[in-house]
Length: 323
Image (cartoon, rainbow, N blue to C red; front, side):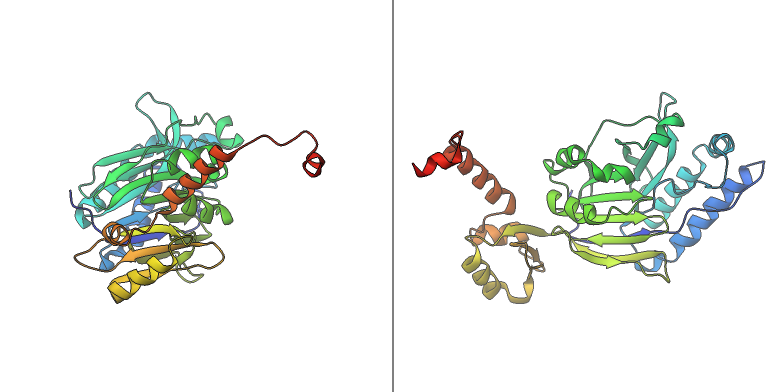
């Protein structure tokens, strides 16, 4: 499958519903479906390739726990099926993030990736639950998988997950192209750290706070405003992350050779830059290979190996070095 190099993504951040629906809850289910169809309708003119929604996107916050469970029982997979119908109609990937039951009937806080045909192509279950979730019977997941799309490898995480380095490292070694974050919590600098550590674009959908897209250097390249609880933007997934060390002259030669067909973005103070190909005939991998530009991952791996080879233990008293 030939991968798309430039895609359009939409992310949504409406606040969680404060309504207190009454029984029977089928009306509340239809209200959620209608609300999300209206939000999606605002971005369809841009023909997005991917939509991302917040954590627990169809929850009613004001419902008492026992009534919320009753609402979920009535909802079943109706909202998921409505999202799938939208994915099929608009030929678009959609992340549906909600409280769901797995095949064994175990409650999960999950994100479901629907493909362009409305079929489930991946499910991620929140690995790190908050105490309140566990108390309500929700169980954590233990997988950190990447899912294949026609634009690259996608990973997902949810809310509190963003605080756990172990999960981040499990994703980073798999080299995702996109990390998709559905949440009630923004995470602040952690969003940038995840993007940089994974060398991936990062799409955040945080209910009532913001929708955002960060590039692989952790720089925010698009964000929603106080007027509109969503964003739509184009991102170029034909990129390479490189460190400046030993690459200065090569980067200059690359720019001289390709001009506007290559973008070299420097965020400053990081020592790394993002190379993006704008050429129709030469991709970013070919560009860095042509000029023998070392990648970010290879550079750090080489530095780590060199450190291990040269390592010798410190004396018990560091002052002994001067004797």
